[in-house]
Image (cartoon, rainbow, N blue to C red):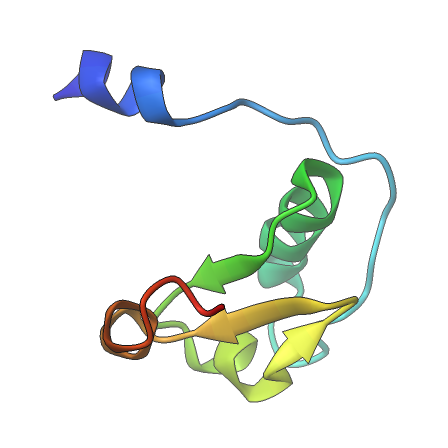
Length: 73
């Protein structure tokens, strides 16, 4: 399983500090990494992140919504 994850992921380092999630500062690191990676979508069940809806053009969606919409095109 670990080798499969390595094959489909990329390790990134945040390039800027963001304070996008006022209700849970620890969640900011998720957004920081998504921005650094140039992500199109963050798939999560975290309510604090989901409340954002999107940030800097990055959609934030629940797993079921992401799967139902076919990669959010």
